[in-house]
Amino acid sequence: MKIGITCYPTYGGSGAVATELGLSLAERGHEVHFVSYALPFRLDRFHERVFFHEVEMEHYPLFEHPPYSLALAVAIHGVARDAELDLMHVHYAIPHATSAWVARTMLAEEGRDLPIVTTLHGTDITLVGIHPSFQPITRFSIRQSQGLTAVSDYLAGETEDDFGVPRSGIEVIPNFIDPETYYPGREPCHRETLAPGGEKIVMHVSNFRAVKRIPDVVMTFAGILHEVDARLVLVGDGPERPRAREIAERLGIADSIVFLGKHAAIEELLACADLFLLPSESESFGLAALEAMACGVPVVTSDAGGLPEVVVEGEVGHLLPVGDFEGMAEAGVSILADDQRHARLSSAARALAVERFSTERVVPMYEAHYRRVLAASSA
Ligand code: GMT
Image 1 (cartoon, rainbow, N blue to C red):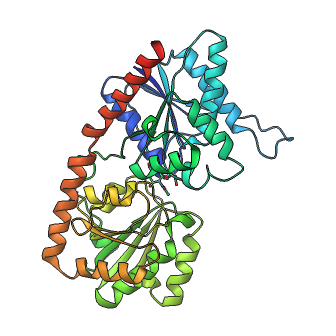
Image 2 (spheres, helix red, strand yellow):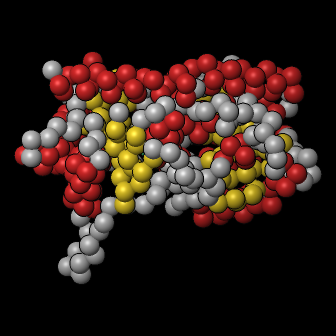
Image 3 (cartoon, rainbow, N blue to C red):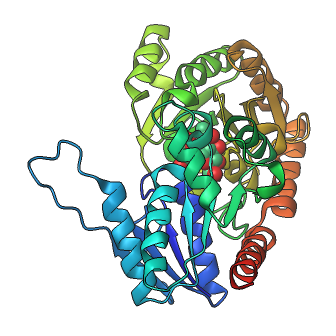
């Protein structure tokens, strides 16, 4: 198949999933065309059958906010026509599903068909999409897609409740990991640099938005530090990063925290973590938690959204109520202070990630979804 993919190129789960999917589809023999305003952050090497098309934007002085959605629609239209795409797969509904619908409408006028598959990732439904300024157009655009997938049961349910899309019209296809990229004991490990005194490594990876509850990461770590000699490694960047430093300084634990900033190859860092924290307010899936599990790292997370579909309580870590940083600290200590328990959770985490969420298992679900959409379109 010839497949177009649009995603946000920035540091975040939806861009990561879209890029890994595109690369894996290309490895399986499909031709993949990425369309976005910048190179997706994980598309960092040459790959056969993979093309990138940058959306051209005119920065006319009249526009305080240049209309990216329209420029994207024009780009999708051009790529679909020139590369003869079979279908367009957009990740994150806003504005991608709308731009794809405009492109599809333009192509229809020229006698061409471009089926659209939209994958819902999270805040495009639960936070941004539901805001009154976007709700009607999100609803319209996702209902216009020929295929609709969500990354968890939880998100499919929210989409039905808040947008009136029947649950039967949404296929749940979970996030996935390549077990040969994410694995325990990866070398070289950076343990000696990150924790030179042999401390346990507690890690958090995100784009530091408010929804990630960064203060809870620091407070949980402070609780762990009372009982266990540990260091907190914070990977990523975003609006809440200064707040994390401020809290750490106030608590007098800044020296035990490493602010690493953004890293593309997080598998190298996760492989030397002892515990992963994800205390989010809302998380439709929690790709970062899955990546940690695949590296054999037990996780302590909130029980928000789709996280219980990924993290099995007591088997691979612990799920606590949102905001319960004291409980999270206790759970973290119970894992870090008991080597045998840590080893048990670590191997269960790896096994679960590989069995349920490997590329090999999940990517064929997307291929089957595409085939169904194409069959329905040509019927
Ligand atoms: O929806 C978002 O917040 C953005 C998105 C991203 O690009 O980071 O994250 C979502 O998509 C990921 C990939 O499907 C999921 O693993 C994350 O749980 C989800 N984030 C939220 O729901 C907050």
